Length: 287
Image 1 (cartoon, one colour):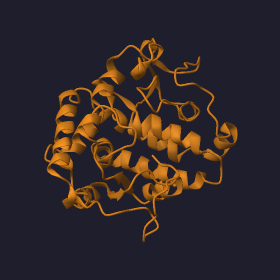
Image 2 (cartoon, helix red, strand yellow):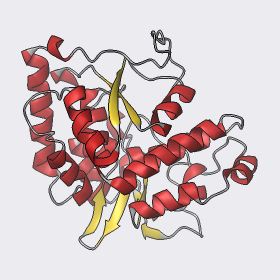
Image 3 (cartoon, one colour):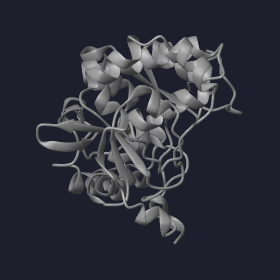
Image 4 (cartoon, one colour):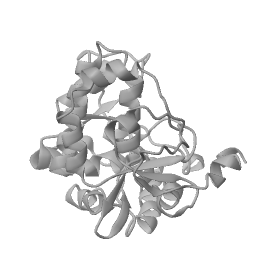
């Protein structure tokens, strides 16, 4: 998502840079192909149809790191979005402004082979493979723009923590209930081989039906698998919740704080699966 970044804002003042696609090495393209191959071993039958369709529509197949300009031309023809390269996490106001104008800021570096399974800062594989296919879906693309516009309006409130939780539990780690069963669409899941399996099949995490306010006051894990996942019934549910809600009273009520821990289950939750929390209780990645 966004952050207070030390990078130079550049001549455009929006932190965008040249992807410099021609500078990628054969090894960097090979890492993309390896990551793609690993994900396609686990995503069929687990990833949402809309995500898999986006991969096909944008030709994000094995074949090296995509060229942002070529990819953006295809994406813009579908939903009006473009992908712009940034040097890393950008300030919140800049991030929201990009989304509000249907521009998705993506990192242009790629991880090393030694970091295939876990990376602290999002790279081009997470940002492009994980996020961009869903932007080919018109309803989800509209939700992302609505989120950006809402973020710009929110800057007069102390609401960034609450907005971050909404982004985290939908765009990054969202599930969707479908006629075929539960599926994953969040970028943080679909770009991770191990979490693609964990999010759907492990008994440890809670799976709870999406509720806007509940999500926005729930803390989350940034360094390990999630202890709770929220599942939407449709992408229209996300869009409608974002554009039909008067956020000002919510912000006043939330006061920029979380009320629930990542593992909490409440009496009013629409509980799909009550997790055992065995993974987190055993220490997670640090065990």
